[in-house]
Length: 114
Length: 115
Image (tube, rainbow over all chains, first blue to last red; front, side, top):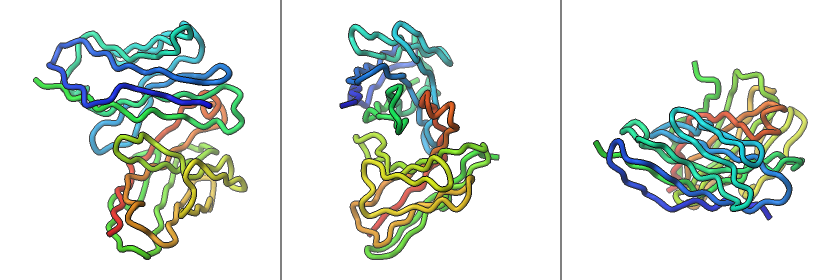
């Protein structure tokens, strides 16, 4: 079946540090992959996405590359800011799935200290 | 104004009470979803609806029911609330195209506590 595994948090970094949040997946077919972000007290919002192998999604300085050979979609940012403190969710949607449901990772809380 | 709104934002209730959570959207999307979020478990799908006449159970529908009153409104009911239904509940929407690609738009959430 389909599943998403992401690194446990919290991840605590200093401002301007390099960020990596690992995400690996198991899926049948050809999934689309997503990172959503949840800022404190808010709902989730789409951060970036990739719909096929080797695609790179990017937004707000964050990047993630769809790696089919390693079944991974790791989130990276070169220099984090305090405002990046949030919970980050990796998710997949298997193309061709008639239900079009998103399969979610457990979320990784990111804390950035000034 | 927010595109996806949820009411109430916070609710404390007692075991056995009936609770309704409401969701409205102004995005014009045909698809709507209810999720619950528990610490360390990510999001779990309760129910989803692809249009007004279509209701589907999700991963954890037991103890919940839904009503799609209109394209823009999707409510979640707990017929007899129990403490393990204490969670953060999110409504989300997508349109047919974005549903295929997986992009969903979320409301701000309702924090429900069942004592």
